[in-house]
Length: 197
Image 1: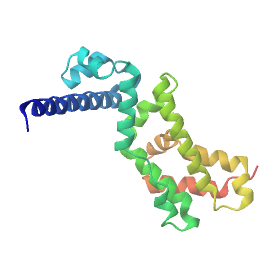
Image 2: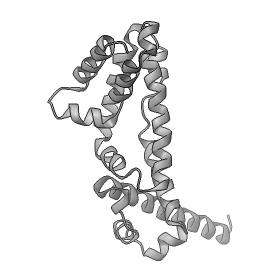
Image 3: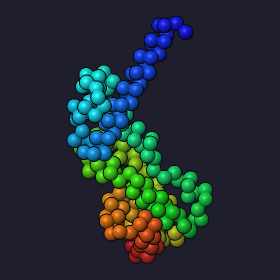
Image 4: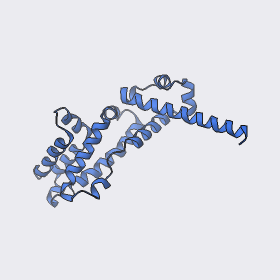
């Protein structure tokens, strides 16, 4: 290998490492203070680089947020529908989905609290959260799909399903001392017993 190729490869590796340090610093700050309060200066300090280095890697500020959000969701994916569709009895889908989702929220609560608070203030975050809203809408369908037809179509039942899946619902229930399975059982019971509209 020529010295020139080795130098180019080393430089590319250093660039990649710097890029990753910047993204990881942004993610850490998002968890601590939220995307809205995260500044380029704070990211530079955390990553141990100059502000100019950040602008070289991310010429537009929204690019860094976009990459950071994508990286965080890649590292923290929500429950995969195949986890219940392939192995859980249909009658138990509701409690299985809620248990898995509540466990996910409990493991990622610090970041979700920041994302939930800052959504509506940042367009890039809004877009990512809109995709997650679509995911929750799909879960709401799965939660109700094996209920009797009248219950699936009832507005109150649909409202309860959507409410049960929200981070804010988990956040409120988590302060009661219930564990994730108990919370899921409580909400699943509500789904089975809510009045038909």
